[in-house]
Picture 1: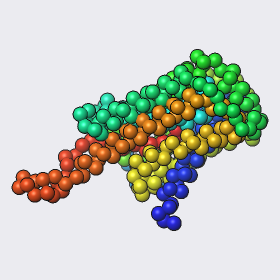
Picture 2 (picture 1 turned 120 degrees about the vertical axis):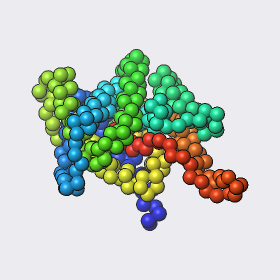
Picture 3 (picture 1 turned 90 degrees about the vertical axis):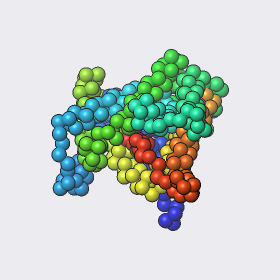
Picture 4 (picture 1 turned 90 degrees about the horizontal axis):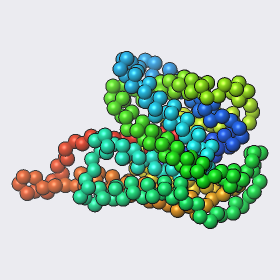
Length: 360
């Protein structure tokens, strides 16, 4: 049972993320404003994390300098507030399946950002480096396929929308192509901002190492920022009211289950099996989301979505394979000056370690 536990945890994590894509789409289709949704989501996350931070970190909290606070503020603004608001708009224009599919680009985008910032090595003449480049190309091909090619549609098994709103099938047909393309572009922009946040937070954690307080402070600052954004774009007070419906369930679920529960589960999984094991499970949320979208939302799945998802998953695994190959090569025994085969530690290289699905 102990050996099976990481695999069970992985299924739970990806199921939680699939639930996030589905419930967020249901809440937004039900008329909830996307900016208000992001504010309430971050508020629920903050309410959940503040008692945890006070309980576990109150006696060992590191000092917070003005420079560290400013960097955390900017990380929260671009990596969480703007990223989530752009994501919310994109989800209105597209579907839960597309959101789950483009989530597979996040590890690849993060790798590309790390390369551009010279935090990750890239050996172009090696097999591993070429495989990484192939992975980036496949991800770009997958994103282009999702945006510009739909192809034949697969008929949903159930046409009744269980959540009582207009069927996603009708919405998908009603949306013009330019709206869908705009949604794909916004979804990719959101993932780029999120990937940049994942890379840059490693540097901020060097000057403020408390992960729990760091996460809590970001959620708190993002709540304030999201409130200002929501006030600017939505001043109709009737749309700010929460009711006992899918909207309340979605914000509570995203704030508590996604930001709170998966944060711990991912940390546990990385500790037991490593970050690659976690990243390789990302396509599972896409499969779960597709099945649930068809069964419960009556969503149309096009051939373009299937092909685009295959390209994205292929690109993800190419980048992960290239990274794993480089790490294995660095650990291979090499000959010393006397010609004896012995393990010689390779020179230390700056490498970015990210929490691959964190919070989105």
